Amino acid sequence: MTLDDAYTVSQITRIIKTQLEVPALSRIWIVGEVTSLSSSRAGHIYFSMKDQNDTVLPCTFFANFARTLDFQLENGSKIYAFGMITVYDKRGTYQLNVMKVVPAGEGELALRLKQLKDKLQKEGLFDEIHKKTVPAIPGKIGLITSPNGAAIRDFLRMIQAAPRLSVVVFPASVQGTEAASTIIRGLELLDKMADVDTIVITRGGGSEEDLFCFNDEALARAIFDCETPVVSAIGHEKDTPISDLVADLRLPTPTAAGRYFAENVQAIGLQLLKVRDTLVTAMLRQRDRNPEITKFYMVAERLRDQLLRFLPEREQQLDGLADNLTAGMKRHLNTKETHFQSIEKSLHPAYMRERIGVFQNRLQALSGQLAANMTGRLDKSGQQLNALTRTLNVVNPLNVLERGFTATFTKDGKKLLRKVEQLHIGDTVNIRFVDGFALCHVLYSEKKEQS
Image 1 (spheres, rainbow, N blue to C red):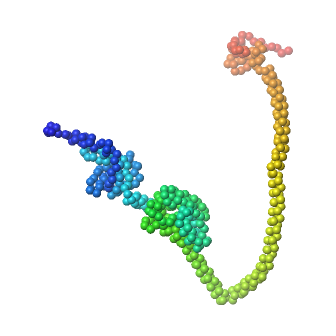
Image 2: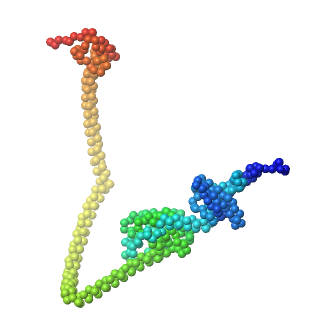
Image 3: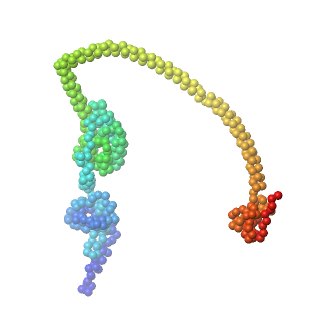
């Protein structure tokens, strides 16, 4: 090859381009770490991928493909990129035109979770200022959990120590792709129930994959939007799910949640007993110090004794009244039973067939009478219609014209001329015949003298 045969830069670039832009490199997956990440106003994303040998491949992620990205790219992220190798003529460099990007490995899953937590934290969903106060002793607890798991048994076993607590259960899936949506439905339903003043979401532990539904963004927002205080009690040890961060109260396990409410009831009960004992002691001291109070207590004791004597008598009277009421109810029920038996007899098939036969005969008689009446009415109406038709034919102007008569109108044919005095010499009139009309001039007119 001589100097005269030297290639221009454009020529050699085109040759390289034809060698690289081949079908084998047009639809390939490449794995690597993201570096030099940047973007343009048009929505294009530019970055490079490198491997453990620090070998770098420039990548271009055009906007029409980049808008399908469902997670945030960051420098250091390990990804799989799908696309085609192309040559950029202006620079003489080759690059990967990216069509699709997916995260590589569990590290990326953790990255997406961290990005979601950061997003929700910036929006204030984790802030203490938004936390609602959970009642120490709820009127009714709405429990969202699996109806078949250990969590519901552990929770209910613990609150048995506080029988005053009432629980309504919403059975939900707490694992898998449908879990978040069923828990959200439970939140929406229980939040609308006026007597539910606390909602508990719980499950009994599991692997990180099992618990991942509690990191769902829609579930986090549903917990935040719930007007009823929400307690999250997800049995876990390592990581804190997002539902714990958004909830108004976080408890580690279903057992801990049940114990929390049971101990509240017991603690408040003990406090009430202490208050009662304190009040009784204070009242006894006041009684001992004040003679009037002593007299009051003596009177109260006498009244109590009288009531104790009076109540047994009244109790006997009430027993007698109860017996009378019971006997009266039995008589009333027997009467009603007899009445129902007569009704049952009247509804017997044989009796019903007899009644149906009577009604059918009456119906046939009425049908015949109705048909006769209708026939008479129709005949009479037909006769009246014929008489009216004959009358109309007599007075019908067209029939009059058929008999040789004519009708005279003004020239425009709008006004009927009835008298000769409506005519003037020289007028043009419209004379209507049965088969048409004629325009005529008035040459002479004479009014007939009345005799």
